[in-house]
Figure 1 (tube, rainbow, N blue to C red):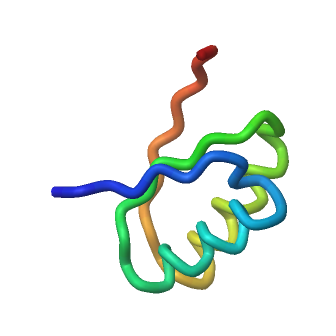
Figure 2 (cartoon, rainbow, N blue to C red):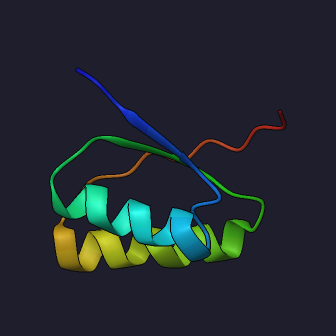
Length: 60
C-alpha cells in the first residue's frame, strides 16, 4: 500500500492538493501546524469522500 505525504495541508496549495488526492482515493498522510484547520479538512473528507482517519500528534 502506498501513501502520499502532503505538508502544509491546512491551507493553500497543500489544502487543495489534499482534496484532489483524496477525491482520487489516494491514501494520505497530512501534516500541518494548525491542528484545528487540519481537523476541518478531515471533516470534509469524512462527510464528502467517506474516508477513515487515524490521528497522531507528534513534533518533528
